[in-house]
Every structure is written in C-alpha cells, then in structure tokens.
Image (cartoon, rainbow over all chains, first blue to last red; front, side, top):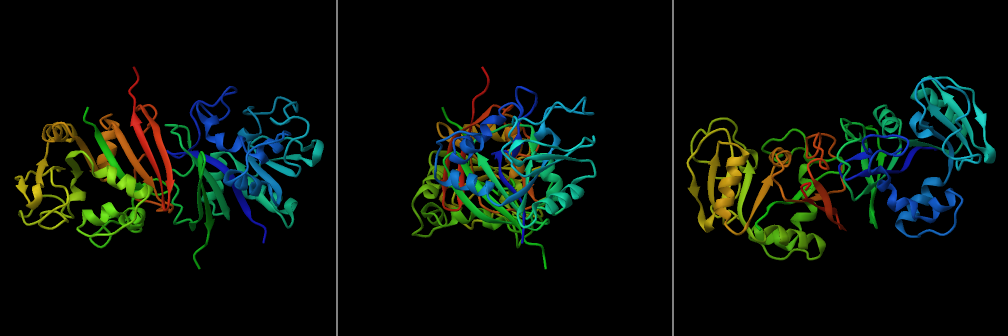
Length: 217
Length: 217
C-alpha cells in the first residue's frame, strides 16, 4: 500500500520547525538553518543538490530513506517560494533552478491559481487551490504505486496531521532552541490522532523519531 | 556559586511532563509513568528508594548528578500529595513514608498555610504561601553553599523559568507520545529567556538535554 509520508522534518528541542521572522535572508526563520545541520552533511543531501561526498551512518540512512519510493510531493506555498498573494507573473519557478531535485509531480498548496509547468528532469509543478484533500487526491493519482511525500512547512504538515491523512512522520530533533517560530505539534493531540512511536534512534546532531498512525479499530 | 537546578525532569516527544487525567491511580497522568522508565532502572533511583542494584551508564550518570550537592528542594503542592484546597488535618506527610529520600529542607508551594514538620533522616517540610520568590529565598538560605533543586511539576518549573530564576535545567526526552497533559515549554520563549543547550546526550530510553541560562550582558 502506498503511504503518505513526511521525512526529515527537523524541529528544535522546543518543538519549532522554523524560527521566527522568516524573510528572504532567513527562509527558515532566524536560527532555523541550524535545524538542518545534521542533514546537509549527508551523502544524500549532497547528491540531491548535485554534489558528491557527504557522510554515511544513521543520518544518511534516514536521508536516503526519505528519497526512496516517492511518486509525488506536496508542499506549502512558502516552501515553493517567497511570493505571497497573487502571482505577479509566471517568472518564479521555485528555489531549485532549471532542474529541481524532485523529478516527479509536485503539488503546491496555494489560494492563487496558476498554470502547471514542467521543468527539466521530470519535475512538474501543479498549483492546487482546492485545499489539502484535493492536493492529496491528485498527488496519489500521480504517484500511482509509490508514496506521496509531504515536504512542509510546519503549517502544511499540521493540516494533514489534524485531518489524519499522514501515515508515517519522520522527525529529526536537533539539539538547539529556537524560542519561537512555527511549532509543529502545538495544540495537536497526537495520541488521540492515532500516532505512536515506531522508531527512535539517536545520531550525531539529531535524534530521529518515526511516528506511525494506527487508527483505533 | 550555588545554582538553582532542575534535574531529571522527563518529557514526552510532544513536550508533556505529565499525561492527562491525573488522579490517585495515575499521579503522573495517563501514560505519564512511562516517562520515567529510563530513570527507575538506575542505580541511583533504586538507592533513593532504599533498594540495591540498578543500571550504570549515561542514564545513571545523570541520575547521580541530580542528587549531588543539593541543599534544599522546592516542589509544587501536587508533587507533595494529592490533597487540594485546605488541609483537612496534618495527617498527610508526603508520598515517601517516615524517612523521605530528601534529607534536606523541602519547600512546598501552596496557597494554604500549614506548620512545618520534620521527618526521619533530616527531611523537613516547609509550606510557603508567599509565592515562588519567597520559596526560593528561603530555600537558598537553607541550602547555604549548596544548590537549590526544583523538583516539579511542570507548572512549578514553568513559573521559575518565566521568572528567569533557573540556572540549569536537565530534561530527559522519553521516546513516547502523551498527546495532552502538562506541557513544559508551551508559550515560553526559551531563547528570549536566555537559555541555550549546553549538553545533549542520547541514551537507552531517553535523550538528555541540559539547558543553561546565560543572561544577555
């Protein structure tokens, strides 16, 4: 059965998935970049961004798993770009250049319609104005037998968690405080939503936790 | 310099220091006992409760440190006992029997005055109705050159954190979800309060984190 997954979503010890005061210079908020220190050193991340080298070990194992068997992505609009409100034109094509590292259909949640477009390497961006369920339906169709990966940010993941639509959630707890910003779990009762811990592994710079949903039955 | 410390305070992955629906059968709330699985197996915990044996290793190291150089304790009333409101009489003398494991003065925060009393082994319980600052002042006097340890629960620690009065906070993140209950950090901006991570060590059944306060200056 294909799954709906979140992978490699990093949060601080105090639970924030991004720091405060996000802007172009701090797309992950002040201090937010440091959440991903464990990740950017991995072999998978380096390859994802066209590089070579990188670490192996537990962090790399989780990074590699995150890229396997993904047939479509869903992301919030802020993960796609810094533009808010109406699209001024079709010039912005994501943060990732002409050949984005997804290589599958990517569904962007937005309140503002925009035509789909295809990039090099098999990535097609679609813009979904009908909400999270429509995006998931289309992503599942596009993914076929493979999984749908929900990239982020925190608010997008929270919406899918609250709707009980995420089967598996891998978070990496980074050893730092952010103090404020976008909290991943605040106000969500994960036990009532059916989640339990299925994996818990500590590594250099991150504690990896996998939550799975086992609906009551 | 003597410190004001919290040690071995366990929270769930979703940040709760106790589970929901606390009562006599579930003094730590439903599911809350499991927060302390890493702790109850340690040599120090076993000795604290008059037993022998127990584990050594990282968990034991943190457990042992928690008991060293403590000159006085502060605790919220719910940590002292299950009685709410006025004291019906002086019969309740804590959860710990005739010889409590503290062996120093213990200051209990309460809105309801009650005379101090001494137990076997050097533990004296004092009841403080003047608030957290009065309790800390009295505890520091009693502790002399030693540290003051704030035991809990979550609400008591939150009050002291918010007031910037805790120098060092050791938390143990246990690999489980509680879903609801008493959240330790919700609504507190630990960065603005001056805290940073000074230690981060993973062990069997818990990730240990030590936060220290470095006031801006």
